[in-house]
Image (cartoon, rainbow, N blue to C red):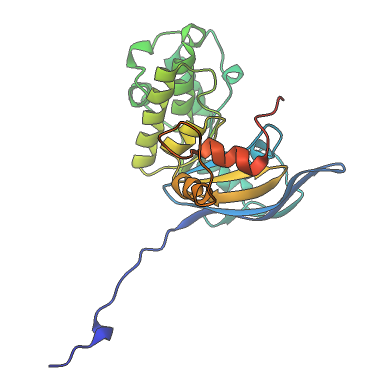
Length: 266
């Protein structure tokens, strides 16, 4: 009896790319904020952009979101070229607004109806408030919400147009630890429902918990990209060890070691 090895096939699922960035550059006069960066984001992953203030991460996000023009390079979102189909890209993404983007005297139901009209979507506000655990705040004015409630509501508005990708820029800044963790749970639930999430954060523990992969940007260049665990393992393999810590290194160590500096002021 012969054994045909060719009859046994192993199917390796390739990850599907939903965002492809190739040699992206952004200049402001002589200043080059983004310096020819390239990376891919896979469908249904949480991808983190980490970097000091002024590193170019927010500029990169704004270009992908169609909010800022690039100088050169290629941006492909769900198979669509940013140069040719920006309006179509807008239809499949959700962008988190800053708190100043909401009318403070409108209640949450009114605000959701307002945004649904802008997106030309028919929605049930109660369903969106339930997603972010704000059902009891349906008639509350936006200005009456706590910081964590405002952030959860802003994420609800990113979901109105049923996007394939949402962008969250520093979503937990200024929140207390419990509110941060509540928001982490919400972000993980959104990903579990099939949405790709791109996030920027100053909190390394947040990136470790949430992100499947991260790219660390410094001075307009990507200087490292991998899963948080792999980046930490790479650093530990160099002999790095934190004093008096059970864990030899964390993602913040990777970041500081690579950039050579602590967070910078705006």
